[in-house]
Image (cartoon, rainbow, N blue to C red; front, top):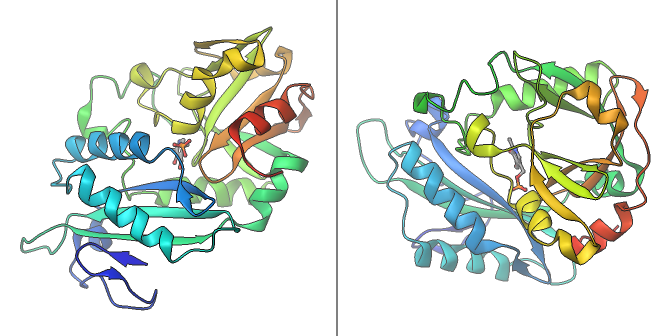
Length: 276
Ligand code: PLP
């Protein structure tokens, strides 16, 4: 762990006060990055998204130079030859006022997530309860912000586990696929690599999916943002979940029905540079 202004400290060092609003209300923001060869991947992109999250929560995030220094410092304490997950966290700080609390941790990528790159995952759909465009004009719902309030996300995944699935695909009240609790939906429609438009839907703009779609040309594919209904995914040429930690994972089953295996999975994973 590294703490802003304190450098690397043992991971059991106390960092948060008991009255920190990050703990009391989940009031704060975070980013999770892939650490490869001892360095955080797509750091500028994650810091840009973190700044967007901070603006949406009216949070005084330290500047990008300080956060870059924190991220790089935390990674110096991590092994070069082991891929890792770096978390950057900024909470609102003490309830009675005071500075934000900022720290970074690095840990291993869970083995089941690494295995899923090869084995794929089974997914169940679950409603998020809001229309696809509900968050566009409702800034208090914090669409597009990566806030610390992830209890619903984690509950969704536990619910999926109880139903024999590995993960959830959230569906809007009007029947569109949105995103997963910790990853972005990507699918292949012919030779067009697609994802859901973040600006219109309030989903999180995934850095991995954005990078992948920006480099689709290297795979001989084009890229587009599209709305899709879950029942239409079976007729596509591949469905994946992407995130900084998992990379690109093929979705093999949706609500118990098999999805077509894509010939492009290995090339996408290689392009993204995640070990399989
Ligand atoms: N959507 C949600 C809700 C997430 O929490 C995440 C990542 O944690 C993603 C999508 C994927 O984003 P990224 O590729 O930037 O990791």
